Image (cartoon, helix red, strand yellow):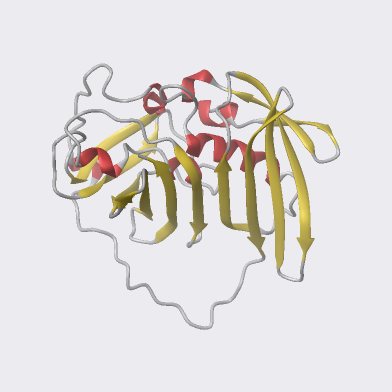
Length: 260
């Protein structure tokens, strides 16, 4: 089993309650990566949804920092409609509420009108970008699970006048794309605001929303990610993200609010 799937695997404990294991290899500094936690909660939520319904929206609020080890995911199906299913989830550890989540799943729909004014950036393919040596301590532990090819914006702590970053991303060891891993991708790149800074900082996530926008083919391939922050105010910063398949299809959009 791929390390990602091991890290988000769950087993039933009873009706609507599942057990998971928070893996230390997904740590940032003081706790686990928020995208990984979102995928872990989503893993539990999908067990309560008809497999033919597709994830469309996931929002997670992070309330407390987890510890390494066992956890519980409490799942409630809030409503099952003709074409939509709404589910809530709660991540618990030792009786403490760590995070809450809301997700919407839908049946496949025949679009009457489609458009995409948002286009994938024109960058070299991942095979044409050399892997950069990353100095020890520059990337958090969870980054060891991914291959990175920088293609957009500037590097962390370069003092840029814009907070834009991105490039090609994929799990190490080969792992097919699906909706479960997209929340981890949405928080798997160094924060865009690091490009503006010249010294390290912590930007813990308050909430993360991921919208699935395209059909996801289960193939093992790179995705192109782009992240941008445009406002830092009142001690908080936002980050907008986009995830494209190699063929230019927009797979997901994300937004998160973080302490700054």
